[in-house]
Image (cartoon, rainbow, N blue to C red; front, side, top):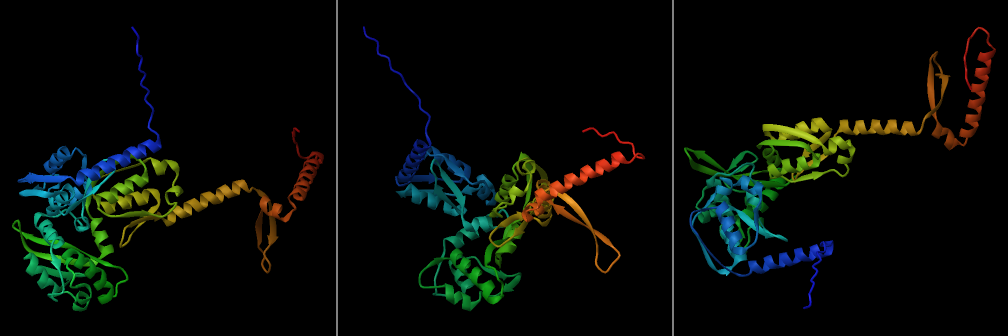
Length: 405
C-alpha cells in the first residue's frame, strides 16, 4: 500500500494578488448589477430594504451614515409600494432609491448607498414634506416652454414654492438669468436651480462667491403650510451646517481624524493647509481628547482651535483648517531657540549709542564669526584673554582662589 502525502501550503497574499482579488470582486459586482432584477416591496423601511437586497444579490451593502442623518427617520424612513422588473439591478436600484433622494455607487467589495447632492445640501435633517419636495424637483424636467420659472415648477410638481434670495422674498426668479439657463433640452428642476443660484447672486447682487439653494417647509400642526426655495451664498449655507448639534466623545485620537469626523457629521467638506498638523507637537497631534454634549459643530471647532492653535475658515466650498497666528508665533519662537542652541553666543560687545550717553550690548554669535573667517582667530584671542585673566587673579593676593586645572 502506498501512502499519498498531500501538503497544503498557505501563502500570504501579496499586494499584487490582493489588488487582483479586489478587481475580481469589483467585476463580479458590476456583473451582478447588470443581471435582471425583480423587486416587490410594500411599506418597508430602508433598513429592511438594504438587508433584503444584500441577501438577494449576495453583496454587502453599506449606507452612508451622514446620508441617514439627513433622512426624516434615518434607516427607519419608509418606502411605499415598489414593484420593479424587466430591468437590470443597476436601473432597479436607481429607481428604488429615488423616493429617498439617495443614489448608489459600486465599490471594490460592496455597494455604497449615498445621499444625492440635494439631500446632503440641506443644513439639517429633513422632514417628510421637504424630502418629497426635493424628490419632485430632482425628477421633474423643465424647459423653455414656460418663462416663469416658479410657475413652471408649480405646474409640474404641484408644489407652490416661494422664492427667497438673500432673505428677500421674490415673486418670480430673475428673468434674464432664467432665459440663459432654460433651453429646449429638458433639465431636472434641481439642476436648473443649481445653475440659477450660481449665477443670480454674482450677477444680480454683486457677490464674489457662488450661490446655492435648499428647500424649507413651514410646518404648522404637522403639515406644510408652504414651501420655500432658499437661495443664499454657499459660505452662508456652510455656516448654517455648523450650527448642527452633536454629541461627540474622542479620547487620545489624532486631531485630523477628529476634524474629519466633525465635518462628516455636518455633511460639509473639509480641507487642510499643507503642513499645519506638523506644527503641533506629537502628543497633541496624535492624542487629543474632546468630549462635548449637545454642542454645535462650531462650538467643537472653537474648542479644538483654542486648545491646539489651529484655526479654521468657513469658505464657500469647505471648512479650511490652517495654522493660527498664536501657533505660528509659538513655532517661530521654538525654532529661534533651537537655532540659537545650534549657534551659541560667542561674545558681547558694549558700545555707546552715538549722540547719547547710553550704552548698548551687541551679541555676536559663532556663526557670524565663522562666516567672516575669524572664528579660529577669535577663539585664540578668547583663550589668551581667559588665561591672562586667571593669571591676574592668581597674582592678586587680596583675592583667594582655589582653581584646579
